[in-house]
Amino acid sequence: MKKVFLLLTVLLLSHNLWAQEADSTENHFVTPDFRLIYRNCSDTSSNFYYPKLISRFAQVDTTLTLAELQAFYYGQAFQPNYAPYGLGIVQFDRIRAIMSKEEEPTRVDFDSIVYYADQVVADHPAEPMAYYYKFIGLNAIYQYYGGDTLERNKAQLQFQMLFYTIESTGNGISTSQPFYVVSTSHEYMMLNMYGFAPKGQALISDDDHSFDLIYLQENEYGVDSLYFNIDLLFNYLSQLFANSFDPTESVTSVELSVGTKFVLELNKTKRHKSTFRILAMDKVTDTLYSDDPKLFPDTIPENQVIGYFAPTRLSDNKSGKVFNCLIFKSNAKKDMLFMDTEIRYGSFSDYESTSNSGIPRGVLIIEMWPSTVKSLLISNIRTQEKKP
Image 1 (cartoon, helix red, strand yellow):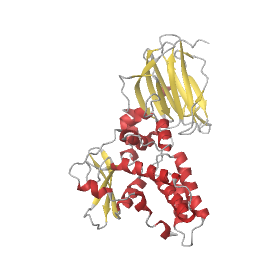
Image 2: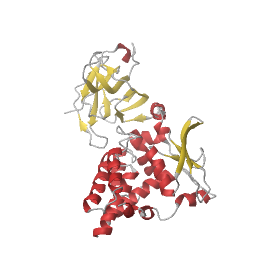
Image 3: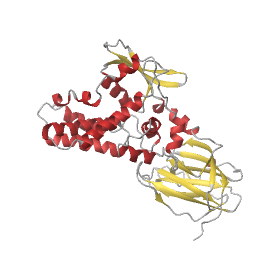
Image 4: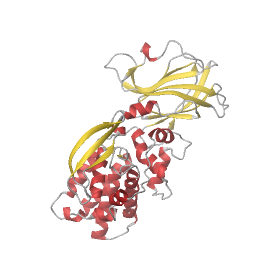
């Protein structure tokens, strides 16, 4: 079966793009702004809001700009199910097992490749290798059995859009112009597409950034090695998380992933067009227990809300059940505070509204959901309840 797929990369990329870029004297690479991407992908009013980008990419919207494509690809690193070392690993192993078979392939083999690729897309819609394998399966079906090429062409274009997005960030020749990736598997994808073979690897640090340095076997371009920026894979995510917002900016909502501590300062708190500022946002890596006196300061500044959305036990009993909880206290100017909260179970599922009957000032509030709840959206923070 290996022969069936031997030359398929030629169909995906019709020429050696790396050589074209590397030989150019006027490279115009665009370094992804992770802080901006994180903020925009979490902003429900933004065109960069991540579910919007998912929908447009699924429709193969060719009007997507480079900024939007970078937000789509790198924005996956800020989603609850981001797994830099395990994006579709089970499904890809099954696909590679099918492709490595020596016997003549069957229609079931081709359909299985497409099926497993679609499983990855459902959980990780910005995973380029899912579209690569989907194209392989659909192209084989077309070559053997004929039929419509629409879905095959869509998968090809989706792979190309993501490949070019990575390529837009650099040429890999130095740490000043590396390729930026969200997974180490994408490093080898880039090498394969360019026709390079690795012979070694080193992890290096330069100017507070992390890089994979891939040493290459002898090649026609005389390139000894390529650099890949892997900041998103190395603790940089937690550092970035705490500094990815503008504390002077007024917002109407905030989207929280599980494992977040936040400090909000209320601005306009009337029923309509309420706004607030995000003063702090930090990553929480440990399971909390709700009656821990260290969770909150003795005094909360006036008009602030301090809280957590994190895995939590309701006591310090380590055998107790863990829930994903919203735990917070407020010190609003008025005695009661109201807010709209919405929960999301999967990374890309729709939000579901939850009830909120009002929050007394200075009182510890706990709302709990099962561990399958991964995201929380808080909006319309107000001191007056909505009119019926």
